[in-house]
Image (cartoon, rainbow, N blue to C red):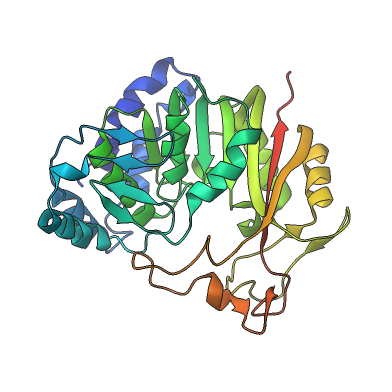
Length: 330
């Protein structure tokens, strides 16, 4: 791509008269910098994969109950196998599942299960401006759109995840007001105070400073906007948290795993209103596992083979929890 920002022309055209107007002057340059071919040696092959995707009117699509695009009758088995081979060039597929013309992309994570846990507890997303921080390939962005959001912006610094999103949007249609930008939260304008809802799901424990991350999220919300935060926690009392020495579940970049009440106290400390725990569950090997679409190690090998209540390193096994809070009203 000579000018990667062209993928985002609809978003860029929308920005000047939007609550994000301050971003308009810089965003195209930011996109082009993040997706420079010199930074990502595999990017030409990902682009070639996109160019091999067939042009076909899906006739039907659904984002409210799943991410399903295309009538299976429009694609015979041979074309479906070709599509599978093309999309496999973007392996590993971690977030999903997606269904394209009857082809099931069985991703590592059953992200739809997480969505079912989150959705009952949040403010309705209809007509809202929504940001999904660390969104991966944008699975939840499509589900947010399916709830009637006015515009959805996902950000993720992994370029392969961004190209996976491009592949899905190729079939869904460029007209949908949903985009995944190749950014970390550091690339967002400071103190925007613009989004009605901000999601941060599976990010907090990867941040060296969880308080700074919470502040960044708060400053992206408009007055009274809602934060939806999903993260790993430990069982324990207020003030307790786990800072793993070395790896956690084979992951090298895990920092703070707080007790639920500890995280609530952090959220109160930075001025978020009414922080509360709305869901908590143990991660299972049915929800996170290796598949044909993600053939690397997954949760099963991250746990102690003798005791699934512990990670391979001896830490408490993953417990995921959802927290909701609101930004101050003024």
